[in-house]
Every structure is written in C-alpha cells, then in structure tokens.
Length: 233
Image (cartoon, rainbow, N blue to C red; front, side, top):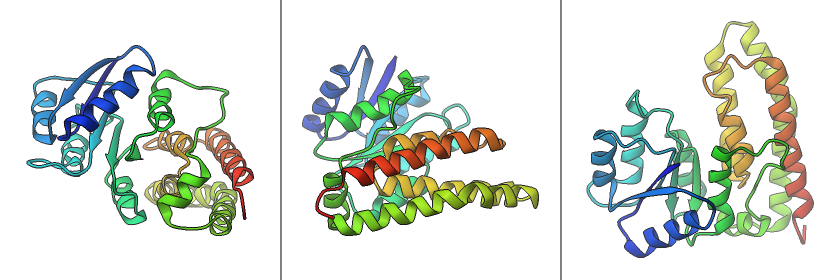
C-alpha cells in the first residue's frame, strides 16, 4: 500500500515515515514540499493516503489539498494534514477544505495509526480518538469544559437522524449533507478521529436511514467513551 509523506522539514518527514513504517507494511513515497508532491501526483503517483504538512514554501498543504480535491482522478484521496498549529480555527479550516484528518505535531503514533487503520479496516473495533488530555491541551480548555462540549455534541448527534431525514423528505440533499458536515467538524474539533472518518464515509451517499443510524450510533458510543475518560471534570 502506497503512502505519500509531504513535509519540507526533513526531520519531521523522517519521523512520520518511521511511525508509518512501524505501523505495518507500507510503500512510502516522500516529497520535500507541496510542489514536489503535486509534480509526482500529476505524473501518475496514486497513493492510498497522503500525510501532508500544512505550512510549506512553494505550495502549502492547504493549497495541495485544494489541487487534489479539484482533480477528478485524485478527489477521493484520503488526505491528512499535519501541523504544529492545533487551534480550533485552523482545524475547522482544514476540515472545510476537505481534509480527511488533522494531526498536531509533535507526532503521536496512535494518531498516525488511526488514519492508517481506516484503510486497513477496523470493523467491530471502537472508533479511535485522541486522549482527552491531548484534546484539552489542543483546545486550551479544562476537563469540565471538555465534558460540556462532549455532552452538547451528543445532543446534536441524537437529533441528527430526524433532522437529516426531514431535510431529505423536503428534497434538500445538500442541506442534509451540510448537516452531516457539521457533525464531521464536531468530531474533528473534539479529537474523535475514528468517528470523523466514519462520518466522512457517508459523504456523497444517499444517506440511507439504516446506514446513517448505524454510523451515528457508533459515533455516539465514541463520544460516551471519551466522556468517561475525562479526568478532573
């Protein structure tokens, strides 16, 4: 399985490649920046997933992502942005641009393996998530606030099936997909990487009620597990 790693910092690139290599048997291709990556992709490189640094010269990670999503041959490529910037605004911008995931430097092996596991399959396994402590640090909040965010998000998930069904009944599939995107953003913000990936798998589909209910049930369980792990709330 081909994996493309894009980073202008050679140390970060080598570290990420090491984590990927230690997670299984992968054919890793590296690119020194976004321009180099786009040259290889334009020449026919077809990786199963791309891990790409956000801030690079010549062509940034966000710009490379836009190029990829605009190319019909590459539009479905799982694309994970990597950055030292973990603020909510940057994460949301990445999600809205079509990023499949977002990893904050310094790298943690579990975060890398979570995204690789989506390709390898993980049926029946709990949806992966970053540690609550990491989420608190990334968002700059305490345990009590994280618990409140998780509780509020669980309420959103509870109402989502009826809301999406109503939009579809009104003949508004775009509105239904927009509602789904808000849930994807919520998962990304709260560090629920596995749940985020599960919801992304519904993108562009007909949102069949049975499948939607099954996925949302898994996401709710992921939220509840995360809430149970929060310490000091």
